Length: 320
Ligand code: NAP
Image 1 (tube, rainbow, N blue to C red):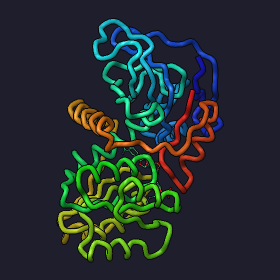
Image 2: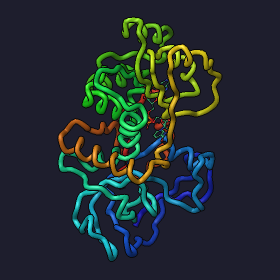
Image 3: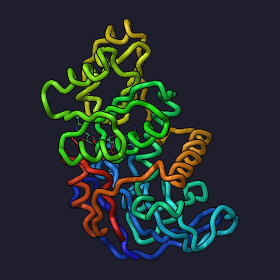
Image 4: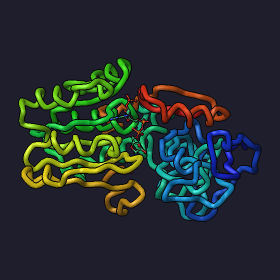
């Protein structure tokens, strides 16, 4: 089979398409024929060798993908050959024509979702769902600011927030991203590349501030996020690429808090809760992953460059 292999940590050029033997599922494992692969920003940090999780070399990247079950090892009862599934983490890596996953890592992909949409479920929707339900404990009467609403996690956050009944403010830096966030349910959108947009957000909240911020770039925005919070407000740090100075006094008067997590550290019970919610949302059509671009697997390096550029517009998906 064809698969992307990383033999040394480095720039996008270390992603090489190679021919390797198709793996066979052992007991408790599932072999998935991958129809679409989800590209996530963390894939690029891991490839650079700067991420907290450093896989042994060589490795095939990717935790997100969707396809059909090709074969199962002994002891598998959850799925059978031919079933449509999305993967949430894998054993052998999703950037390939076939991938091995544990039984607990494959989940039914409802018919309403295409394979490309299924490749955009786990990291984006899992993160947004955990952020809103478990971390922020959001309520319908609240207002959420999705600071970075045009990308994978942000658009998932917009749809989930709307499904929950919240008032949704979103930001992006391109007209395409702003339009997408509006189309997917944001009540109001703001351009985070324009001076004065934070004042506009505060004005739009009637001077009260927002209850929840889902933050995609904390090292740039966290200090300002605190000033936008209403009483009992919560900033949920999702993305961060560096350091920032904040004034804790901004939290004190507001009885506010900053919460943060990584998806890797969810408990088994939280993961089960997340997947139950995601499958229900995909099935009833409230969660509709937005596929911005499909590229052949061989263009993984291009995908890794483009995902870090401004002007996000949904998911970048690789097609093996
Ligand atoms: P993505 O699809 O590449 O989208 C990035 C988003 O960040 C876009 O909406 C982009 O908007 C926005 N952005 C860029 N500059 C910004 C700024 N100055 N202020 C606010 N937003 C800004 O990435 P993603 O998959 O949505 O992930 C977003 C971030 O969360 C990444 O850093 C990722 O590593 C992280 N993440 C963390 C976890 C976790 O477990 N904690 C899980 C998933 C993702 P424009 O392009 O329109 O400017």
